Length: 394
Image (tube, rainbow, N blue to C red; front, side, top):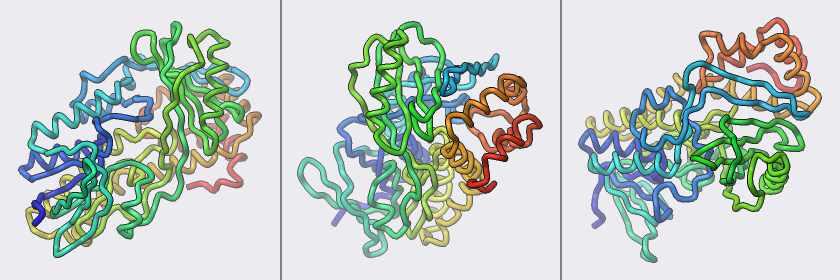
């Protein structure tokens, strides 16, 4: 007979490990399955985490590589928009170290981890969750009272369990490079650079930076062009580097709970559609999922009706934010380079960026209010609204 856990967790990313930590800390027996041989392996992420996230989840300060209080935005033609705040807005972290810190905290709380473990199937059997896990060439069965799916975008488990699939997503490519004097985050816009999305140059450790972009097709081809451009500008030492690839959800999963099941983080679409950042939202949802599962375990009621409280909780915080962010994302995706240039010109000539940066609702992590405020701006709003004919307001 398979050993019975209180919870199994599929995926040892930030959401999975934080969920495991919370439940183990509350006294529940938890096991985490990670298909990679090391936690944090093969992560394609810029590692920019907002200060608010670290204030709320002060776990991995040892993973911080640099602070960020400013960014340089470049229009398609090269116009420069400087964004600067006097205080730290975000941290650039070593993602492998960040993920490992969260996993270590979970293990210290009592959670078990099994690496190089691919979860082949999950089913509800005889009043429990049964996971079939491939490990060291052997298929092993694990039983638990509940399962949390936290293994990122593209896994087949949510659909197989009747929870649907992510409705929209984007591909990303990134490379670590040797950088020359790059000390601020740089963001590049334009159809020839990252069609419909954006590219970045993010300083990390001394003399190193991450270069990457998002686009719906051929991200590797566009990244190669970007690296060639940055090399020609003298910002990076070489354009001959290895790429990593990943996918980012832009819309949430249709349903994020079921009988004895929850889905958290990227796997659930808990990601900012504007920037693709998902660490903070994933941790917030892991927190809410842990509270819900703890209550359900204590009452011995792991029905779908009881676990629906998890989705109700995260939607109260994130649903409107995700909706507005996705609207903003689709609006930008439909803009031509000339329209992007027009927006840059309006912002620069009217000093709109400074006005928005000083507004009380400006936030690195919450973009809905910022987008709506921009739409209401006297100089910018009319122009932007004229571009929304094919993108109805949320």
